[in-house]
Length: 107
Image 1 (cartoon, rainbow, N blue to C red):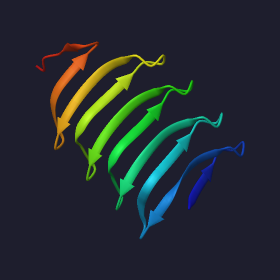
Image 2 (tube, rainbow, N blue to C red):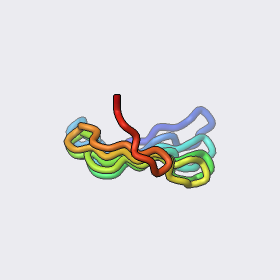
Image 3 (cartoon, one colour):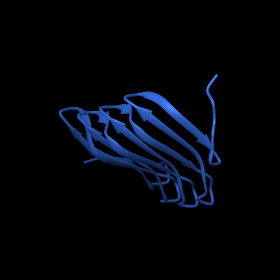
């Protein structure tokens, strides 16, 4: 188990290395002890859902990866939990983008 700490002694990040590569869930914290982000890895690559949190504890981002490549829905929330942006990726390519429920066109 890998752990790193802030200068104040508060846990900053924890996770597991397997053969020198990140594996499984890695959790990052704010200095206050609130979870900042959760990433999931397989053989050093992002895999499955990852989350970023606002300092107040609300989810800020929810992202999906397959073999380190964006794949599926990416959701971005404001600091009171309202969905603001939704993107959909297929094999790393953005296929749709919605802002406040409205589809946005790419230039």
